[in-house]
Image (cartoon, rainbow, N blue to C red; front, side, top):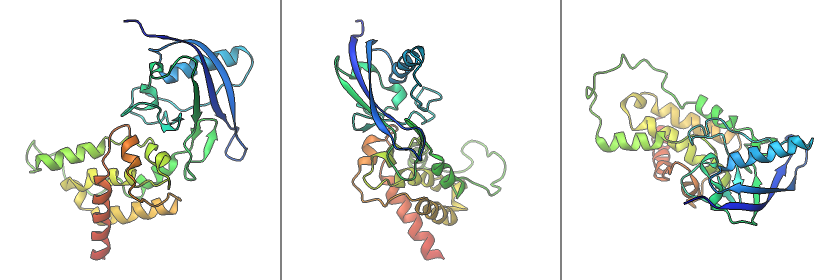
Length: 253
């Protein structure tokens, strides 16, 4: 069955020159969009129209357009990545909207993610947290033979689930406190569940949490909104694990 055609849409888009400038919403009309068009493709079409009219196009982040890179971070109609579950913005299709709808599009709203321009935000704070300890730096030897290091199936599955985090920032944008606990806990968890990551576990938990606080992210109050809007379904059980890792590191010291 052919996708529906959205004959007329109103796009209410946040426009902001840079982090120092005041921004505002501006409205645009776009017509005859197929329901099979992705949200980013729809913005591409809008930008082509704006350029043809001599108007500055809307700046937005994107890269892989396959739900992997996490760059397509937008707040759409009050939800991170838009009105669908377990997807990134690039995986959102226009069939999720009704003909004649007004769609509100904003950048992430968090102090630690300053606006670069329009819908683009600076998420290098996440990179700084990873640089504080989200890696293995010790020599753990060569690549072991398969099954040479006994790891339970449960631990392996939990590590892989946590490693699915793409660092898009939806958890921060959704949290009323702009907390980065889900992101940090996912990065700590996927290493904490594997033998190679245990060597630096104490330093990792304390360093990453300290850097998160330094960069101005808020505290976690366990509302669970981050888990609901995470495009990769990262569980808040990882936050409990991060708390245990942090407490253990504090006691050891």
